[in-house]
Image 1 (spheres, helix red, strand yellow):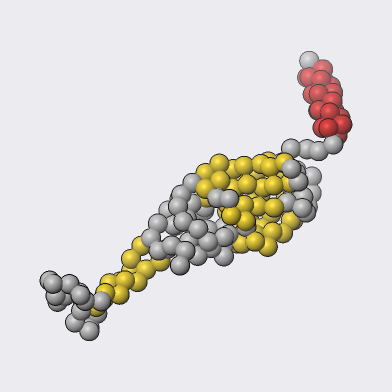
Image 2: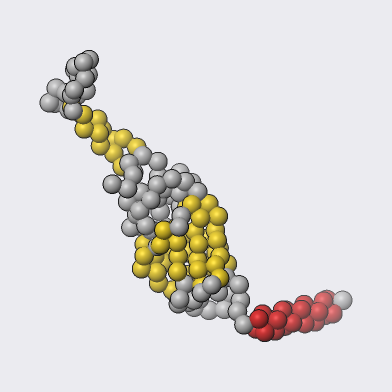
Length: 161
């Protein structure tokens, strides 16, 4: 029985490979996207809003003409690294474009075809590291109640500008 099953599986995969070869192309697949700091979750959940982070997109059946977009913005400097051995994955690298918001699609375009990793990347929420002003010593507890004082707010991921 085991021998018959092996023969059947070999026939099935040979038939499948023939059909794929007859079709002319194999369908691309995105397996993973990584590159942004993984402080608290997946490595694509707190990407810098300023962009510039190098992304690594692992998958199958990419090619040297692949283009990448994140949230409909082009990822710059796309490089293709072919799988080094059978069973290994292809890799695309590119520089993340600036952006804001969560759950952006990562799209790999190959000619007129494309493959989408839905909600594959999110930019980090803004965060404040320091607020200073009013008394000249960096304190904010002596600000005038009438307003008009200048405060300096420092932090990161405030947006695109």
